Length: 237
Image 1 (cartoon, rainbow, N blue to C red):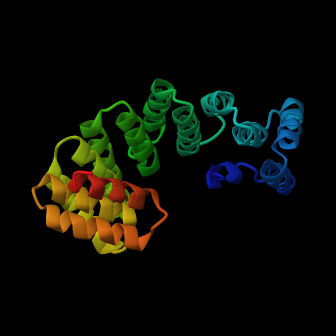
Image 2 (cartoon, rainbow, N blue to C red; image 1 turned 45 degrees about the vertical axis):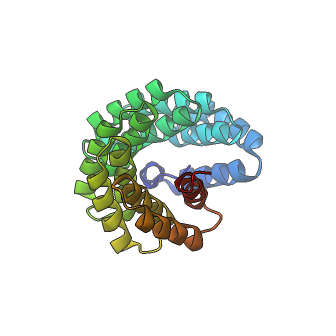
């Protein structure tokens, strides 16, 4: 998980920042030691940075649910601006999604958006949760709101193309994939979505060429694997 700039801003004292940096460095090399260090630090001081590092260590150890709960509890404390707490809830939601707790993830993201309305990262994360629930049109709507904050963002456009495709809006998916490829012409995920939209709109020849481009652009990517499967389906294999 990414290290939150705004969380680090809370460690204004140089010594506190050094403690946090040391703790996060341990997460990467010895997460169990990092967890012990962070929990002792949190017990002694109650520092939010200590709790955050402890959650990162738990996540590194595979304890996603425990880490998510710790992050959600941290975000509930009125210790920082709403946007910081919203981003902590976004981290919690990501861990809950990875653990398969979609309802908890979406609830955390709903709460995050009350703290930071229109936050594009939180909206994109909630779109992931909605997608996991099969609510593709709602996911597309959240991604549209995220794009209002980050217009033309190719990653968001690609995600919305997938959401629109799964919601049955093939022309919308085509438009989003084309827009994403204007910003990132060789993006394999956008190429896959373009091919999927072309196939859905009755253009199998164009879809084939697009999927071959996705495979050539990044042969080992997930998008390339999906393109290969789609080509097999196109050929009736």
